[in-house]
Length: 115
Length: 113
Image (cartoon, rainbow over all chains, first blue to last red; front, side):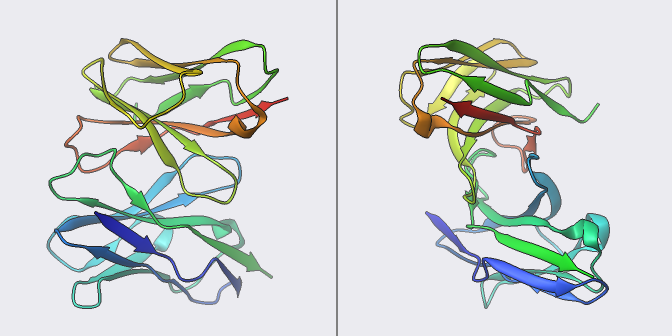
């Protein structure tokens, strides 16, 4: 079984400042890692994913994440945020040999960007 | 077309009503899913259909009844719901069950009164 911990339930940040959203996971097997964004009253949109290869993954909207196997982390970063980045961000994992539906989600981090 | 389309976007229903949620994709995906998401919580898997057959039912109450009439369409029939069933219902699809990622729809916001 897998588990995902998003330590910060809310992250307030000023526009144009950098941000890091933290994600740690636990698993006894190899996993795929994902970050999803959810805007108010919307579905989930995939920001980026780590499947294999380079541990630095670039996604949409200027986000990137780094997979750290030794620390079992997959933190999401953006060097300069915009008001439009205000949303809920979910980190998720699934086992390599699991199914696409068997995503284990973290509890989410609310990113609030203000002027 | 890389979208999963859900209708309606919003639905208010009484506890004695019967209603249906609809989900459609034209990406040729053969696995489709229903998730339930309560406020400020992550999505929870309800059902998985694989090649139009029910593959996973996560012990969902029988007042929720899924249906997959063809490979592009997934329905969720609702009957005798409770107020605590109010939530955002998300549909997702993937190439097949073993695909690396699933694509999510925009959801249906359901309110049971």
